[in-house]
Length: 208
Image (cartoon, rainbow, N blue to C red; front, side, top):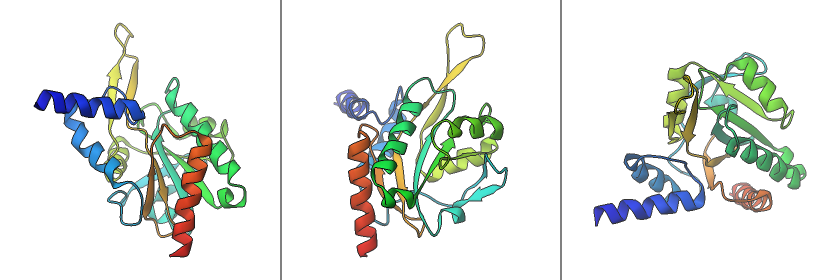
């Protein structure tokens, strides 16, 4: 029964595109996050200390205050999922018009060894001048991952001469101007679905 349960959880996670090639030990933590859905008080986020790639200046949780933020964790060497998701997020914010302009998109690396500030700055500029890229030392990045319950693991490429990919979870986190997570968006949403979810979450936040 335990094997069947783990297999079912794996099927769910892969079906929604939340993670790729993750181990069973990570299922309970990620599924708990998934079940939270949306609303204030989601148990994600916390103090972190990273670096804004474009300016080279420190970027902490305090920089999320005063405006809406859409966070995503990934890496610049990602062959397909990350660039697709980032492009989708930019399209979703554009579709929201003025409301989308109130949301700052932020891309946080899970691969600080390769994603230096210079690399991140060049990469995010390919998607939007509004997209901010964050990196830092491995310890600081790991702390941010833990705050947001992000799974990230190096996956060596067989016979790749040391080359590797990163397996990682791929949720979007919508943070309100108080720095609280108010929606966790599944990666299988298209741009229109993401725009709808963001609009609804922002509307509830404004109403409260």
